[in-house]
Image 1 (cartoon, rainbow, N blue to C red):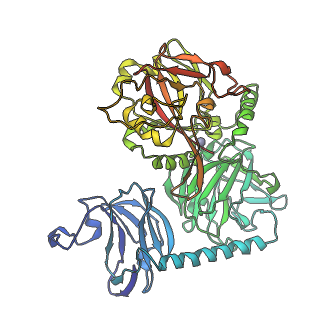
Image 2 (image 1 turned 180 degrees about the vertical axis):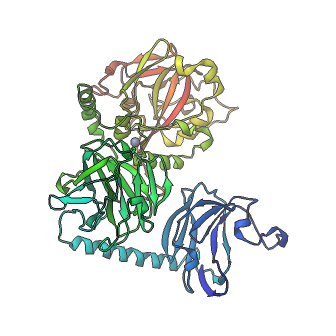
Image 3 (image 1 turned 90 degrees about the vertical axis):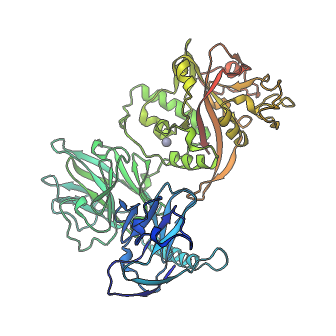
Length: 578
Ligand SMILES: [Zn+2]
């Protein structure tokens, strides 16, 4: 919509949002509340000023530059995105996620409140989209900013000459030390941070006398003449920082349980800042991406570091030594990982605490891809999701192989897959499958997944004709009533390792596009199941491999098969992105 007329005699301004409430011309006037924020009978999300309210209650502060500052001709938009988030656009610029978990059938709600007296709808479903045009211009402005920065000849980032009172810089402004007390030690980078370029510092000195520690983040304005407050949290404008495991925007906590707790940093660990293409801030610890700390950060921006509490000295890590670990693990690295695990056991101290909470970007992508698979949320127990990517696995300091069942049987953890656990049926508790049964893997196809999950039965993917493996055979169409008696006589093939069950033959790759980033990934899916001991046969792999597929299991014991109905119970959905 576009703002057409404003009247300055009123205070307040436009409210815009989404509502499940269907209001039509025939809705009695008495049922239409006087303000959008009073729409509480059905879920309603409204942005007003810089706040987001759900059914009248505040759910987010500092969401946008205030809508109170709208002028005639300004354009405001609202969108429910495919991932269920609500975004508001001002003059074509995405203000980021205002709210999430928005149901599909919602209406835009606009309140011509206060100063806003008239608006017009300017978007339409096809043809010229003025929003789009303005987005293009926004993008090109940003590209120019980046170009500017790229022409900047100063190669390495150091610390800015203007800093907190207790700071002493040395080593060509690349080392910063707090000379006394526990605060007044905020430092900023000498130049603006470039996108997709990791800026890292190393912790040189800690003093256990104090509590709390290093605080890092970004500052959205030039620090040239800035009078630094005693701590970074005290900066009340255009500043996003991580302290401990919480993210603060302009001094207000906006997120908790983020990344490993910075208060637990040890000497020698590195902390990095990276701004991605979507203007999201990522924190890196020891070269490892901790996921998105904040979205829609001020840009251009400077890195900000507060040598607070325990942290007394840091230095810049020169760029040539910076090489971030990619989120996705290539398959050919898996063997190397095994060696690494062995090495770690033989003495190398794991510097990252095992119980740290990590916001894993790989897991985030898998979660969004999972939505595309069409398995209803009701099947899952979200408290049991586990990411087995390299980084998450290492943080847990977990073994690669576990034993389950009675009698015990070994299985491999689904290394580099992401696990989404199903709710266990009551039967599973009665049979005590979690203690008594074995754990196994099953690679499957996307078109079969929904039916398997709906029936809880891997046999449904079987067919009576053709191929030797039911996993790749075509589906027979039948209804519950006309299901042929022969169906289910064909064995189901499973494996104690996903390295085998996740092969192309069982688990083909699909190209899927992340609804949020629009990036396309190669995706495989599989299932982890409970398998009744004694109900299956152990046999050799049938895909003609010469090399050992999993270092723990001989190739001649990789393929487990069962014809017994009721001997398998679904445990979790597995997703892998390559
Ligand atoms: Zn992970």
